[in-house]
Length: 166
Image 1: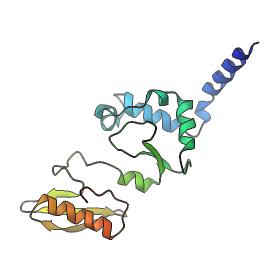
Image 2: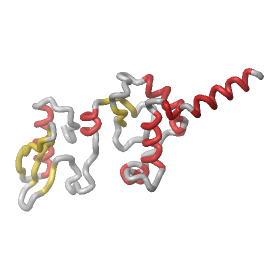
Image 3: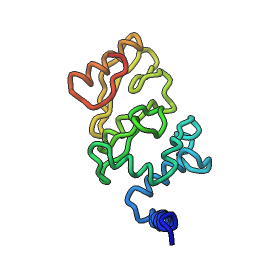
Image 4: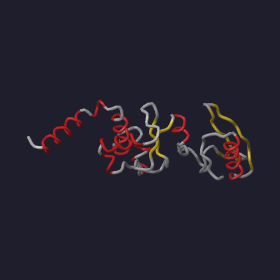
């Protein structure tokens, strides 16, 4: 048995044992969200053009990379810094669940183009959700005033939410 045979057998054994790896279920879910049109969350990932880089389609390359990221811990969640970006080097980080939630984009019902800003009958309304509680920030004559008020609230209260204009 040569060196190549030993390497091949070791790689095959690792491939067969990947389901025991703590990160394998996450990798598999990521692949399904991006490539399986029957997956319930495909519409939020693959249908929007979000892909997995070619190198990360190999589980072992993916697993080796995510272990090198700061704060690697299986109790945390892997997040894409750019919510519209692909699963690729430089766009992944370990975060708490709340940080991952705060990195979400606008809801599909959003008509204003800004998170937390909506038009009621007469005015633009600004709100924010903090610790599962909706906080009404105010009513404004313009959409930009509502966005600026929300951003100011985020900054003044040192929240982890993303600002949109400031």
